[in-house]
Length: 457
Image (cartoon, rainbow, N blue to C red; front, top):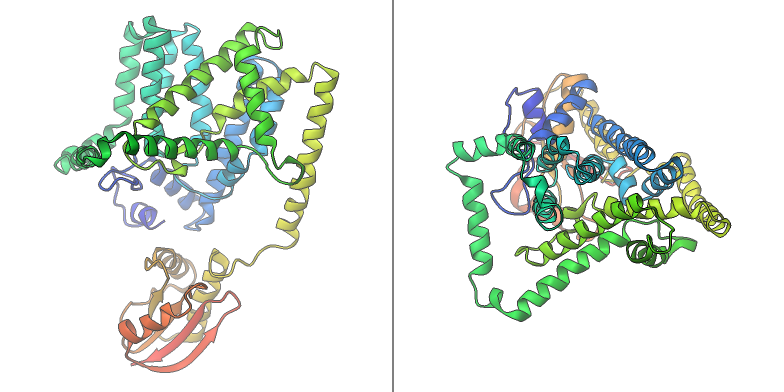
């Protein structure tokens, strides 16, 4: 939100977005500009980001349903939409704004565009590659995996699709979508290129990195991340604690025996087989990825599992035992989800020091305590960064109080302290080393747990 503040209120446009886990490498800027639009719409309220993610998540759900109904049938479309709707990671994506979360919309669009391309419709080169390019604005690591996997897939299974002018134009659009990062790199002495190459050479430049043992350890770690990602695709509570095991074997059955058992049509089987091949290529690519593979790199990758499962569950509806199994799945899911929804709205969590409500209460308390007098404000947080408070103070000052406090230890100044529940003494060290000066007028602990101390110098 501080980056958005710079765009919306400081009028400073940017060529880059959030940083990645590799120092000196950044996502594209589209996420910041999307947040900027929602921020303008809500007059600076950070809740606008939640509204933005709500629309993106609903768009993902609706697009998946429409595409499955178009390519297959309504039963499959409904089964797939249900699996996405109850997926814990999809629910998380709809709940709070974070730059990887739009991948939940881009990946369904990519899968169906890539499938249409492999059916021989060459115009989908104009969709596949720009969609992958857009991924570099939200989750670059997964975007790289999908881009390379798509090229490898076509080279192995459909090489003729790369031998036409549509492919050239499509790849041209891909690089055009990366133009903000490319321009940034050119303007800053190839900062990102040098950072990436430096990280690669550093990761391969030791004897340890070249050892079979190190390679095996890295491969197992990366496979473990994919296993966690697969498990996170499903609601695993109560009766469904081990549902991921059943779904794993359903996927294996669908890939190997779906067509032979006549459960799946040729079209459905080819769709599942395409996704299975893409998963296999991406997993193999990750084994050679020299850096740590973080769980959030695979945000939205759950779609690769949920889409084939949606087809299989939709086909099961044609059988009595299948209908019974699906109804039991829906009933079990509802017994878990309905109480959670009820608790969410009937007993809302105040949030302590973590949520915006507690932070705003603290800021309002300080403004009201100061009255019409000017004051300074210093903030302590366990992570050191005070960005959340800086933005909320700016927003409150702009819309309600029309005065933004300074950050000096003089005159009347307030200390807003966010205590660390695990290390309660940390803020006391801050008081004794960083603050030191000023006479304490009052100390108040708010219901959120935030501490407000008023001092005069």
